Length: 146
Image (cartoon, rainbow, N blue to C red; front, top):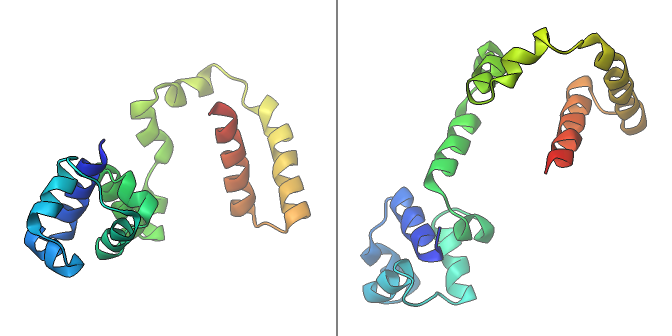
């Protein structure tokens, strides 16, 4: 997505018009339009002011994706109690069928002991809770995939 489109999406998500943004930044509405259509770029100071206005970090503003932002907001608003009711494996298996298939194909117990040892090591060496150790191990495994 272009920077202009990111600026447009962030402004719309904030519920502001080009005129309102222009007034708050002390520029013309045409300047806002040119930024949003990639004719020109805001300077770094104006970019930072836009990020503050739209309640985003500068990095978030540059890579703003309204769909991703909406998903993040839904996750943040979802209570722990509700999250515990969700069968995450079943949900992710809709996108990645292997998650539903592997239990019948892989001898899970062969992997359990080595993974348990890694979890216990993380807990002991870093004083992590069970959940924190699990999340760290999950993140480490995720980094191997990237």
